[in-house]
Structure formats: structure tokens, C-alpha cells
Image 1 (cartoon, rainbow, N blue to C red):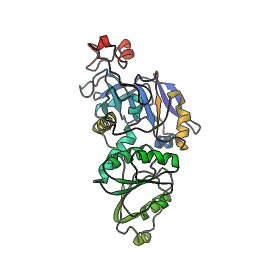
Image 2 (image 1 turned 135 degrees about the vertical axis):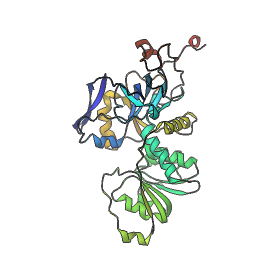
Image 3 (image 1 turned 90 degrees about the horizontal axis):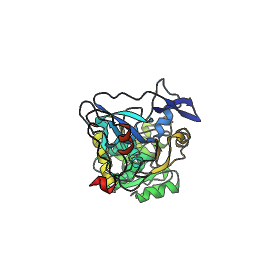
Image 4 (image 1 turned 90 degrees about the vertical axis):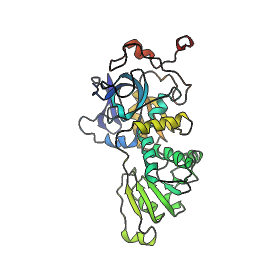
Length: 350
């Protein structure tokens, strides 16, 4: 099979290479990847890749071999997954606790945009606690996490002030429910009982200054890649007794959170913001654009033929029933691989 491997070259950070198909553990399903998304943090890992790095954590596709221990979806099931590594490939082994089934209405491209950013937003919302009626300052809002958090929190009744670099990106955040958009964190009208900060550098102390006394700042990223310097005495004139909470989204299992995100998308209550869709042969150039902040929202790559449900919001389609003998840990046949994700005809559906 083919997979993308790291090159260590800034302008061509990955290239296609031949590799052995992964052998899943007993609690893993083998997934044929139809689409995967890339995250800006992954571009940093590729700058000085460790030996043996096989990137890729956000995938959607078709189970071609069910887990040997009987857990998880059967062969022939369309899924979204969050493997620990290896997703930028034609096939990936995914722990069944980190898979969720996809309904026909959710295309693989949309699903692939969900895992890391969507799980992060969902878990940030839980950490934030009750947000109904609360004013929240959100920095770095135009990325995948920012879009998801804005829509989820606004739907729960939060009053979001989103910080984003451009008016174009701000307009979409308003559509998703943000109450106000500013283009410099210093222009945010505080105080806020809660601040979500992801840029680091000089922006974090400014965001912290907008916090109400006794408020909480959740620090969930450092996209600017510049360390933060704080002045203890500076807090005395503003957010005295503030709480700074470090947040990292990671922690399997991910399946329940993925299922929640899929359900919200299926119900029209969550809208993946996909800024770029391309064939995976273009991954290297897309990663450069993502690193240089030339992509708004999520970037998704398709593997092989375009998914049957269309690139972003295509027509719903039914997944064909797996044939006898295709479940219980046995790989699908070549014919089944070709047809399992295709719409069934009216005759076949009866």
C-alpha cells in the first residue's frame, strides 16, 4: 500500500512511499481510508521529524477487517476514527474504542474534519462548565477548534467574543453564533469570566488582562510558537486571583465523543468548516499552506476515488450490506471493497 512519510524538507514535508499494510491488534479494526484531515500542529512535528514518524490522526473510511476480539463495527461499516498515528495512508489500524459509525448523510470528507478539532472543542466545552449566559473570550478563533467551539458554545447560550485576524474569517464566526468579532485581542471588551487562549506569546497576557477577578483562563495551545511571559504584579491591577488552567485534549477512548460529533452533524447542529479539499497527492503543498496560515478552517485530503457522498455535503447514500463471511475479523474481498461504500440500486435495497 501507499502512505505519506516525513521528508524533513520545509517546502515538501511529506512524500508518498510504499509500505506494508498494517496488521491490526485484536482490538483494532482495519480501515480503508477515504479521507483524512491535517492539523497545523502536525506541520510543526514535520519540521524536525523523529525517526519512524508516520503521521495521521483524523480519518474516515470503510472497515475492511473487523477487530478479532469482536469489538467495534463490522466489516463494510463506514466510520470516522482517531488513531494514534498512521492515518495518512491507504489503510490504517484503529482501536475500536476510537471509532464511530457514520450515517449515509455524513460524507467521508466532512467526517474526516471532525476528530482532533471536534474532540478538542467538545472537551473544552465540558471543562468550561455551564456557559449559558456567560461571556467568553476566544482567541485563535478561525481555526478548526475555534469554529467548532463557537458553534457548540453559542448553541448552549454563551456570548462569544471571537478574536480572528481578518473580517472574512470573522463573518463566518458570526454566522456560527459569535456575538462579536475583534481582530486584536486588545480590542476585546472585558471583563470576561472565562477566556480560552490558544496563541501564546504576547497575546496571552493581553487576554489574561481581560479576565474578570477570580476568572479562569483555559490555555489550550500556543499557535504563535512564542513562549509566554507573565508579570505577577500585573495581575493585581486586573484579574486578581485568576486561575490559569492548562488543557490538552488527548486521552482515549474517543469513540463516544466522535459519535456525539457525528450525531450533531447529522442533525444539522454542527457544521465542519472545511477550507480546502484536495487529492492526497497534493498533501505536501497543502501542509505548507496550512503552516503559513493560508487555509481557513479544516484541510481535508481524499484518498483514491472521491467518496460516493460527495466532497463536502453530497447526497446521502446507503452502505451496501457486507456479504456472508465478511465479518468476524475476515477482510472483505476485492469486489466487496469496490462496492461496499457505493449506493445500492432500488432493486438491491428491496
